[in-house]
Amino acid sequence: MKTIGICYLLLTCFACNTNPPATQESIPPQLVNQPIEPMHSEDKKTVAPVTELDSTITTSHLMGKFDPLKDEHFVEIEIKYADRSGQFLHRETYASFINMHNAAKKEGIDLIIKSATRNFTAQKNIWEGKWNGKRLLEGNKNAAKVYPIEKERALKILEYSSMPGTSRHHWGTDIDLNAFVNSYFEKGKGKKEYDWLVKHAGDYGFCQPYTPKGVDRPDGYNEEKWHWSFLPLAKRLSDQYKLRLKNQDISGFDGAKTAVEINIVKKYVLGINQECL
Image (cartoon, rainbow, N blue to C red; front, top):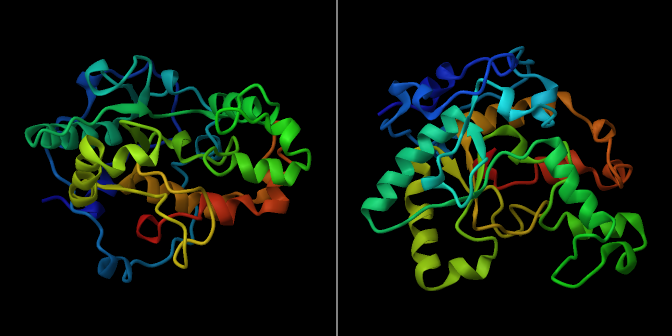
């Protein structure tokens, strides 16, 4: 069984983006059908904090300011694994998801990707739609009218949607599976799917970053049972985000000035399940 340490060594340079998009056939064969050993809590205690910049990762990629269609490290998800065409993942995330999908299928569990990579532009469209009231919150609330105080409006949107430049979905490491409401995963077919993920997703390197908020996770987005993150790559990226980016760097969209007041990097980018850090 390959360890996460070995998986780190297989990561390719994130900075290049000059080649045409890769296809599924270009996924490294050594990564397919190879389970990944999860990082257990007792192992994490021995991992030294990251204090050095990684030159293979660019700030642009950390903030989603690139086009996955033009990045050789991203591949388009086959429609049999997704609810629509035109979605992308980092090739290593995708390879491990395929393994997880196939294992789940053998047990009668069908894992379907509903959302994958979203770059800065895509996230900006979502955020500004909600910020300006074109996308209603909770089915019928125009945030621009209901929350005229900008910090309050931002915090309401942040219950489930990230500010552009701060989303884990920028990285090609995170996927939303099967449904976008927690209630789906609390009974029947959805509960079987979630129970399987809780038990087995770690075997393929995936972790649920947005668990219920409480003493261990007081800040950040609300619980998302559908959101799973590929740790062998995502942890490396979140470590670099912590080193490089400040609240003041979050800009370029309506409502961005609230990032400093909210302390967006600490409370949201890093305000995740401790097992995923």
